[in-house]
Length: 199
Image 1 (cartoon, helix red, strand yellow):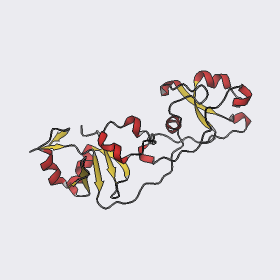
Image 2 (cartoon, helix red, strand yellow):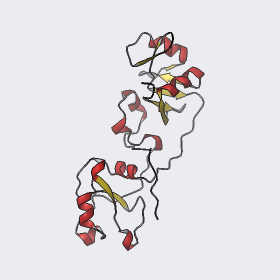
Image 3 (cartoon, helix red, strand yellow):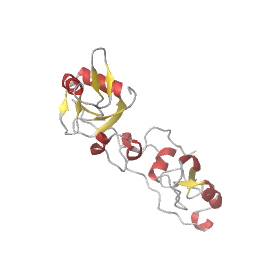
Image 4 (cartoon, helix red, strand yellow):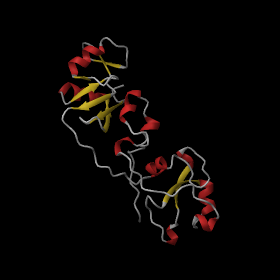
């Protein structure tokens, strides 16, 4: 329970990070953040701890009391947003393309998908947001080292660089806490991953 997720907002109520329950409770205790409830009321640590004793939500135990887990905290002094650069990575391409082959339109588990260069590298294609798409293995093999036109297949949609908020990509699929939903853009997708580089 201590490692489950808590959404962190800046003081303008914009999401800036996802942290653990352990870290969120420490931020509350130190007075750096306040917990927010479903009615958008803010609570400092002592008030939240007193409120917690009267509710039947997920909670953690301390030496002398149970404390309700805050699913959203608001930082008291931080008003900035992290940079909006989206990592060019395998998981972010899968998220952009909704785990859907961009040739046959089948949505598949990520283990059955790979990446395809629309303009093959052998023909000068770059490894970039605008040239790499999610593809199933059969379509990738069928296309081979050709363009979609040369292979006689059609591209579902032209690939573009996404404009996601970095910390919350994929939130609509992975977040299970209803308390987060008012603060998230549901078009966002995954952050944790490695960047892909053009050789």
